[in-house]
Image (cartoon, rainbow, N blue to C red):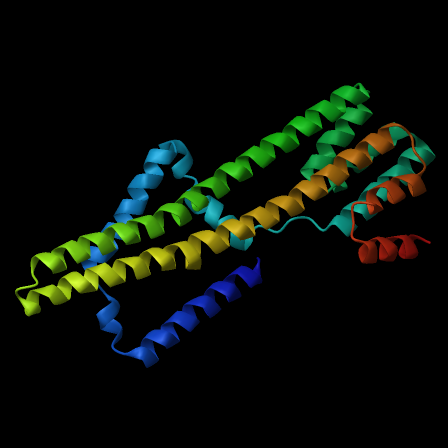
Length: 257
């Protein structure tokens, strides 16, 4: 579980809540018409942008920002180095015996193809294709949140224009101009909150998780190809360590030494 996402959401909501509590009457910020314009309008625009089959996966995409945890690249390096040592000592076919112990399914698929004697270029093509497909899925999920973040403020502005129109039409009746002004201001608030409190931050967190997972899978591809070619375990470790920041890279190499 990514506790940082939860903490960030709680802090952001608390900041707005405190502003509401100390700023005046919280009920003044509740307007059914504004909620309808922003939420339903944004939902409609998002439905236009994406197929229904993809939109049904939006809750799962959102939950990934909290509950998905990318593999630790340092642990991946240790595992692949261990497999390289075993393959160097007992032959690559010996890796078949440790497949049940492998924690990452992507490593399992690569090692199995190597054990089966699959052509190295074909192994790399298959693993690269799987990685590209993963990136496309992640980009599609983030795209839905980007659309929400894009259209929510726009529908907030539409609500503002509607409110101003209603207000101007009732300028001769001061009592009737108040509700129009409320719609004009609150819809902008709702649109900004939906975009900047929810859709934008969640989308950025998903992009970060995607980058981390892509890095790990790229390391795995390099490791599997190195093991398949029979490289020395130290060479395998050195290759994979280049994917890490200098501080982590030095730590891994020092531990190995």
